[in-house]
Length: 143
Picture (cartoon, rainbow, N blue to C red):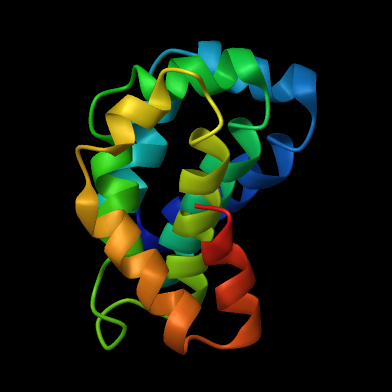
């Protein structure tokens, strides 16, 4: 809930807080925090989506947080949707942050099987590797 500006500010705050391991764990253990970030991924403005995807990328660096994220229904679908979206509809910064989150989440032992449900992720990553700018190619190479 909240205005577009409030969602953007909240997502940015969570992205910064997620850089700290203790705070990252507090975020994933806080009731509805991941659901709120997921809501921003789905319905927020482009800047808010970028920050929310970045928060997921930072949170997933912690193994415990990563497992909790992977168990949160809808997160992978939302990240895959942003990453694979038409570049005319979703900006590059959002797509790269979603890619970073998917890349980090792909390191979990259980995620490899889960990510195979989304063949479009590999197709999009291959497209970035073949045609993207250097920074996009480097990010996609992680997938």
